[in-house]
Image (cartoon, rainbow, N blue to C red; front, top):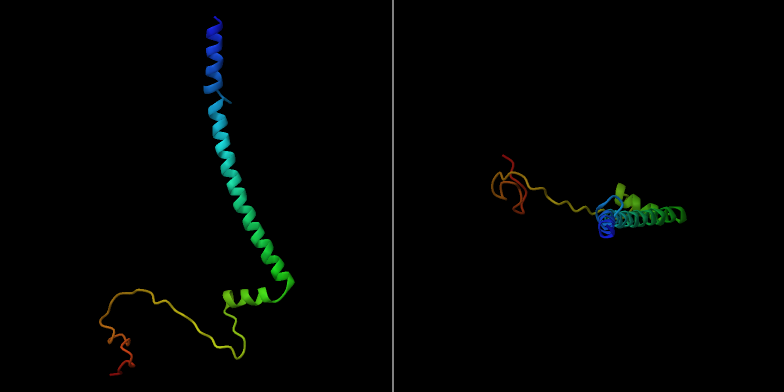
Length: 106
């Protein structure tokens, strides 16, 4: 009789609600949430650094204006690199004016 009780308690411990399987699932979920929290904390630290830069001087503001709005100071050369988008082929490069000479007007 004692053996039956012991086996049923072991079965409940390993297979029952709140048992070892559930504990392992909770550990895995906890690890996932800790990783997500770490990512969020890094993001928060980045935003706090940006806030500090913006509050402390004009260099960060100028840098953001340059990258986000294309700010160019007076007398400063403006260079823009454009990556061509692939499109339908309509002929040779000479037909499209890419031969090095200007296209011919009819």
